[in-house]
Length: 396
Image 1 (tube, helix red, strand yellow):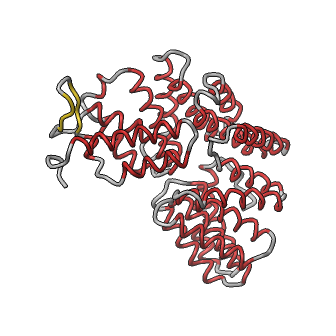
Image 2: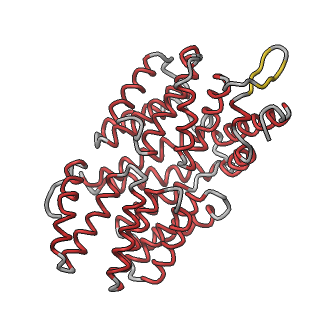
Image 3: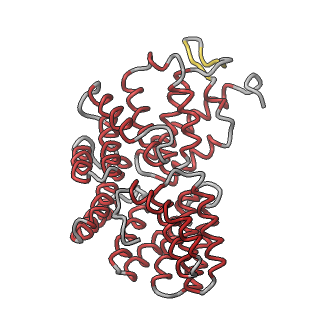
């Protein structure tokens, strides 16, 4: 099929599916949103990029149309937030930001794109932008906007996420709380719940300052769960996953298992590989902590099946945990193989924290085996990662 032989009816149908997916996702109705997105994405998206409209109707342009590229980026933004397949979105966004017509786009559209690019930089690993660049761009866009509405809220969200990355947690919470004053759950369910999720996650990461923040995170997650249940049309299984991890880190393994199992039931209704991989990963961690090694291995292999080939940072986390299972089983060779696979995945993901966990396990495993030369080979990398992540250098 070529651009010149396709009908305008198909072009319009793809646009309608993208619009439907965008609006359903913003309403928090995840399953119908993903269904609409997938109907659109079964087709070549060039059928979208080259579509123009004027007084005489729709037409096919030999070059990508700036407005078409712009709206495709906006409509697909929430899809890539949910699936985390940001490499595809970034390829599309590059066409938008590098197009000569970008500067002529309306301010609110440019603002939305800058906000989505900030989320991409946060979730995808900041390959294109540094944290400082993201913060500068969001604050600059905010100064050009009215201080209310969804676009302003998205900029607040991105600023909160990136200040959290800098471990400036109080500043992060300030931005996230301000965001929740700009939109309501009734107006923008998806983005409001996303801000609640990241607020709870920020408290979760603050536990190293004081253990009471675990309880604060649980309070936010459970309050969010109550809000979700009051609105039966809203799908938000991520809440169960996040709450499960808080319980797991607190040692409340039975509560964690309950949350992960509940999330598994919901995830099995979707076609989202990322979501379907998260819950077996959580269950694998719980089983490992409980000493159920065969069960842990089975859960983790299922998580790897879902993550593999797409979500490289998460696949590395699963492989690292699998290595821990094999160490406990006394199979050091398989553990080393899994750690090598984890490093291969991390070569395709910018995730220094996960690389730290993998390298740390390598150092400890080589030390236990008295392979001193290999331990010393990895030790400088471990110390470098600790410095980069602002961790105490010792103990290892």
